[in-house]
Length: 292
Image: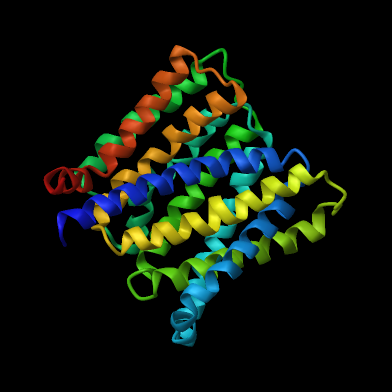
């Protein structure tokens, strides 16, 4: 792989993290007029359908076993997204929520134990950092630990299972086919649950539909397309390291967009959680540094 491709992939991955961070903003704005699960259902089903033409040949070539495996991954993603959108709906502080949701990365090695994989030593160093970060956030008198924060932590646990299942499935299934099916499964599950428990109203102002459209086209379809493209150009280590930037961009955008302000204790807590993300991926960090 030539250095120019490394640079292009890294820049694309940075763009992916920025688009993902904007997804938090677009989603929060859309939730001011749409019920949570209906929003997720429309967003992900539409995005999955839009990705299908790009992976048409890969989708046609999937065996029945690969379809079943991909759908199972999609179901785990669905559960994580349900808790994530509920967290976003009830969130008191978007920036802090982004770091709480990112804890799933730290928890992945522990979930991998269930599949017979042994965590690396760096994981045991990352866990105390993440715990200290959580402690700083919970001890901060300016931060209200409400339903939103609890939902984000639960989402992180579910995402740890999803990341593990997804990484195993990605070794056997085309990434773009895997992404398209997952998105559609999330959309279908969310719409089904929404139809059962949420009221559906479609008289929202045009701005709400604009935020939904931005979520579908920019924060989901475009993001996953660029992510798939970059993953085909870069080593796994690059993806693993650069994707940790998402909570940082989210916190910055929340400050600029919603005027959120972090106290010193919140900043310290988020910093410790981010350090835990890097330490948990230390092997990838070292490879990335050597290849830069």
